[in-house]
Image (cartoon, rainbow, N blue to C red; front, side, top):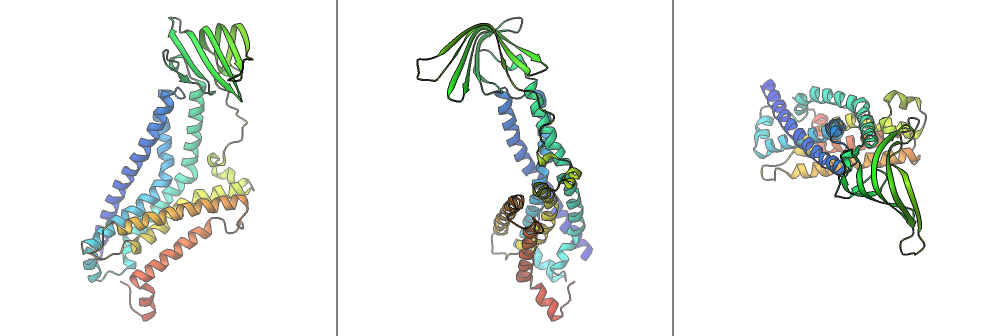
Length: 362
């Protein structure tokens, strides 16, 4: 009987987990897809990197989705079991509260291990590759993005308009406005084209035109006539530039002795720990009577999850700034969450009362 119940609980939770994970992933990827399409439409990205950026975003989202989807799946399944009085029948068959964890123990540990690999290794690499893809796409923008007849925002913040494009891929009757501090720089030329240089990357070259520079509202404008003028679209990526710690290799973080590196290490480990604690909290949190709403525990669970995640973020900032002692790190937030789960388990199932009174847990 116990084996049948364990298989039933595992199957129900696994199906709910798969559905919740796919739905949440689809929502997040759709939002990211809309954002990427907006960047591509404004000329900041090429269409060839859209699929690549979506793939990297999906990997990074898994560190957020897996703890949440597992937590919600257990709340949904066990909430339904209580609502339909199935849990009462399971309890009547001799299954105790702690026995409800048995079918979830091994899958939870396995999922936490996989999540740890994703958060410590795969997600940082995906974040780094996503940044490099965006930078390379900005450096490789071609003339096709400067569509004639509409205003286009360039990577350097300038706004450009061209009337037409000739057969040799030169833009004609070009207008560009660029804001420099409190001044406005306006370029008007007969033709323009994009050229690639080793020093500054892609540059927009104007031929036979005028450059107007001054402060809006003043009559004192500087006018410069030119036969050729260059405007850098973006600068080359500095390979020596300091990389964000969120994309640093896990081994490199251990070699650093800064609070930021230690906070990043604990932040990457936290999703796996949070997954185990959330599973522990989900079972007592899902307990309800048949007359209660099925979604009461779900709403409370989402609120607890948000508080948990936000407290982890605050603890990370405090650790980076040296507000909290280094030995506390982010661990004290996990400890508080675990204690809350123990209190809920004790209140809802009176587990410790049974243990102290000598009752056996099946």
